[in-house]
Every structure is written in C-alpha cells, then in structure tokens.
Length: 152
Image 1 (cartoon, rainbow, N blue to C red):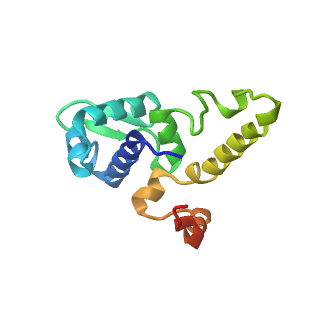
Image 2: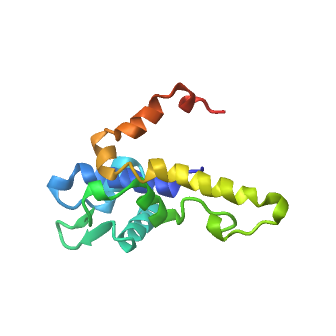
Image 3: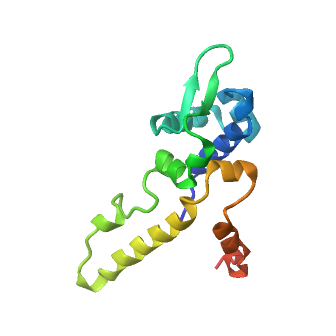
C-alpha cells in the first residue's frame, strides 16, 4: 500500500483539528503552519473532507474548520477514501470488478484479501485514537509484533 501525501496531510490536519476541538474552528492557515502543509494543497484536501461530510467550514472572524462528526466516528479509512478514493484499486477498478483470464483468476482473490487486511487496521483506528495517541488494543498488538517493523 502506498500512502499518498494527500492522505498523510489530511490525517495530520484532522489530528490537529481534533486536538483543538474545545477552542473552536481552526483556520486553514493555522493548520498549514502547525503541520507544514502547503496552503493550496491543504485547501484542496479540506474541500474533499467537507464534501465527504468529515469537516464543516465556519465563516466569519472566528471561522475556520471543525469536525462535522465526532472524532471517534471518523476512521483512517474514511479519510483515505475521502481524499484518494478506494483503499485498493486495480487499474482504477475495485478488486471485485476486475476480470482475469483463467490462469490469473486467483490474483483477484489476493487483491480482495489485501483490501480486507487493510480494512482490519484502517477502519478500526479513528481520528480520536490518533489525537489521543492511543491505538485500539488489536492494532497495538499488531504493532508489537517484531516482524511488523521489518521493511522486507
């Protein structure tokens, strides 16, 4: 899996927003400054997250961006889908839509299994977890496996 810069920036921006929930909306300029995200790129990301119902914009002097749903209801998978589309795609198609000839048909099952494995992690970690720096137990267990850290 490749995590795009757009997904990484989106997640970092949402963590920042979740960390200042009690202070009210935060401006795009402040988000960009705190996370070192280029302004134009951040504006595009925030718009994608607004269209997906993750964020809401607030107008006025005290305006800015705020979560549109509670942080515990927004998963990492939700964010990736909002800014980059499906978690797994093959030639722009979902794995169940790809057709292979008989000799390669088991490859489709690999893609579907890979998507399921990604969901097992990305749908169970929320913005609240990331902002609180606490992962769900089943995810922490995976991180604790020594082989998980090997780059092979």
